[in-house]
Length: 182
Image (cartoon, rainbow, N blue to C red; front, side, top):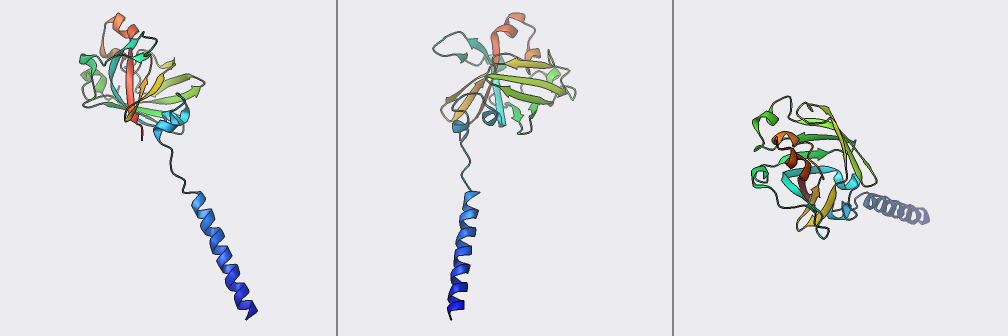
């Protein structure tokens, strides 16, 4: 009889231990707002960001980043998508409203690699970058919450540089991306 009680208690303890181990692997995923709370990080970038448009780079020190999206370059109805993968690769799909020349098979999608070092993001195209003005860029993006989304102002035009021939526009605007804060 003592052996049966001992076996039953041992089995119960083993089940409790297995249940406890099983619970440790089911922790809730962090929200993007939490991952991006301190600004740029690899963890914050991972995921699919919507390119909603091009905006003037804000010179207002109280509200750095991007100004309002320029009407001619507002892609929010059919945004481009920049997917940052955990393995350090990315894929950028051009917005539907972009000029036809950027939607050709040689320019879309653009593939490449990315790295984060302190406050800098380095991007390098590896495939279909023929429509980019330069094959690589290092920027200091501004990432901040705005309601239900996290907004990222790249700080430059890179992927969409060839949407315009205006040199002054190229040097004073930024690509603007969003991702759900959840």
